[in-house]
Image (cartoon, rainbow over all chains, first blue to last red; front, side, top):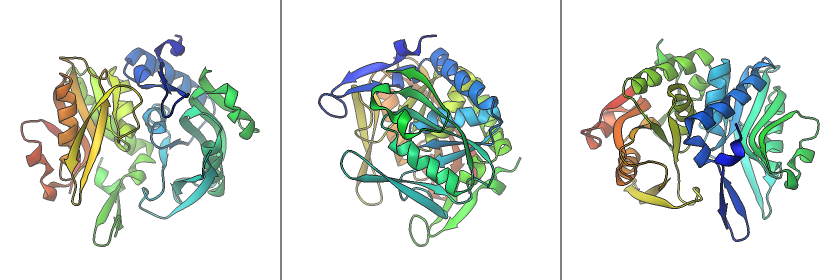
Length: 170
Length: 170
């Protein structure tokens, strides 16, 4: 199945000159959703994964489904102030300023094999921060999966040394 | 399985005097996640549902998994400014001020049977706004599912006339 055909281009979002890749048109088609999910599941299953850690909030949509299908635990990585218990955080650079993501300290046990998941790989800054969170807790980042990768932004170079699965490339 | 035993109480979050019900301890246990998921799936399957519409962002975690399992489409209901294409919005009252949620206009077709899903039923204000969004698009709210219901806040009264499934009650 060609997933490219179910992604919608939205011009000038979130700002003028940017063509936004809208995944909601894929999500609302069950056959497309399950095709993508099965690709993620096959990848994760081959690696004996114990946790799927996904980044808020679009990463949660497939993240929970992948965890459930492979029998792994689900771990949310969230924006600041959202997680209620003891946590650690990492900041990363944006075009202007910085942003921060957080994870509960007890979300990952030392030595656990983890797949990180998000919907989109752009510059890779968010995912690089997520890798640091997992590794600070002693987890092993065994793979990283994205629905979409924007090849021209070269996020893959920032994540060098990690195995990356992307279902759709632009 | 007693899901109550895998929910963590976090005192004084998000502010002093409130005991927050933390679901991350449930999510990271595969057997608990899949037990809850199967309850949601049985409920949705019995109703011939075409779309699962879930509320950002904790609602996405089970929402995507339910949609996938029953072969329905997944529809995200999001905070303002997040959805890129043509959308409608509804505002609702909070303790102080108001908040708004949005849905894409093409997310639901007229006559489609929809289950709304979120992690928590508190006062019911957010879910009431979500119902309005679905019905404005011609969808039929066939059921509403929550992981947790805070009975003492009486959200169920605000949602009178709709069938509600809650797996955990406080």
